[in-house]
Amino acid sequence: MRIGIDDTDSPQTMCTTYLGAVLVRRLRKAGIQVSRAYLVRLNPNVPFKTRGNAAIALVAEGNQEEAFSLACRCVEELADLKAEHTHPGVVVVGKTSSPTFYQQAVQDFCSLEDAYQVLDKEGALYRGYKIGRGLIGATAAVCAEFSDVTFEWLAYRPRERWGSNREVDGNSLGVSEESTSPHTWDTIDRQNHVVVCVPHTPDPVLFGIRGDSPFWVARARSFVQSEQPFTEQLYLTNQGTDAHLRDGTIGTLKEGRSYLLPGIVFSRPETLKGGHVRFVLQDMGRKVRCMAYEPTKGFRDIVRALVPGDHLLVAGSYKKESINLEKVRISLLEEDVVLHSPLCTPCNRRMTSAGKDKGYKCRSCGARSFTLERIVRPRLVHTGWYEVPSCARRHLAKPLVRAPSFPSMSL
Image (cartoon, rainbow, N blue to C red):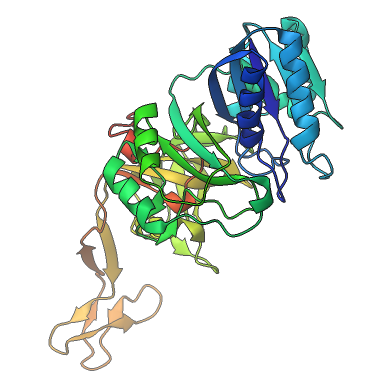
């Protein structure tokens, strides 16, 4: 059977993965064998998500009704049911035949009615608390089929320490990353001097190590020195897989979906108030705005270095008529040409406009010219992929260390 749970946390406390770790131990104590635990990230653009929009699914063997009862009691005990926007859901089902529901939940949107249809079709045991919106994520979790999989080792704090400062040795995190990279990622962001794997929210998570196999996350964890965890859990995940991305074309984009999108730079990037950078991408006469926001730090310098005519493949979410950039692949570089008013060689100064349709004139000697000077500047970027730093990466976004060759798309 598969046991799915979602929407038990709030911005103030709790974490659905913590509840999953506790449930694993309670199931085993009751004689129900748990073989795998899944952390399932869903569409990151869902407006009513709490933090990372994660559900959990446990693969187990035993009595389904007993497992359902234990899961419900766990939710009733641990979920932040007092929070206004927390609406948990619990699902227990045998082998499912609805993987398309997971695909829709990670790349699109699902309704509660959609979830009920799947659950009734599969003959599932299920319960929603309050308005029951967590049944959407719980259903997607039990239906999940990963075409690519990564792993996360999560350590949790005892309840009495929730909300207090976490004690995790930064030097040990550096050793952990150095000893296991590129098989692990997003432990620390050296370029921006940010610890990524330790959260700053008042929830049970102490730290989380992400990697491409159980061996590597366990090895990375062995270097970490911290306060004594309450418990730890290994999850199989769709994190770092780009599962949220779909192929798209400008002019057919839908709000709240995430795309892999080809195009040609139409306008020079401009830096806005707050440090955000934008440019316009075009394809077959259709245009879309692309944004690199301030939290993406040095990635904005790559975006600023683009010029009209560059051929790109961009990855990101379409929100408020903009692509919020996660990655960019430069496939073809155009010359960076700047036009200047003509230079008067004898006077060594730039001519100025002589009026409409009258060309340019040197104010010193009176020399005239109708030809602008064409200057080709060296490019500051090369062809290839560029990504946001670890401190700005979304859970689902695939880091470049995992993918030396991304799909190639030409215009």
